Image 1 (cartoon, rainbow, N blue to C red):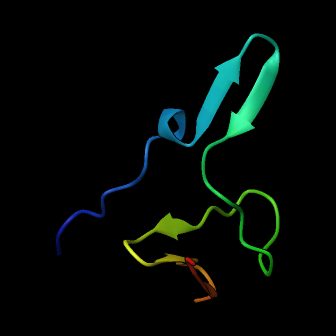
Image 2 (cartoon, rainbow, N blue to C red; image 1 turned 90 degrees about the vertical axis):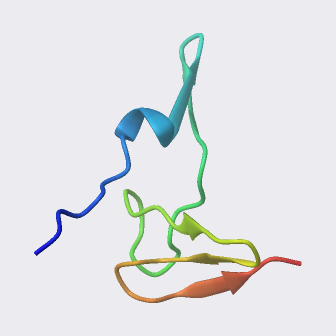
Amino acid sequence: MPKEAKAARSKLYKLEGEKLQRLRPQCPRCGPGVFMAEHSNRWACGRCGYTDFKK
């Protein structure tokens, strides 16, 4: 069984001074802490399957 590739947490956040900025949107169904994956035409949640199409 192949090993799953996990996103590094350092790639999900950006620290500017004392403010923490999230670089990806969070899933509206799952709530805080669950980030959505970016695809060419959509954002998708890998946990619940919620999809938001880009405009």
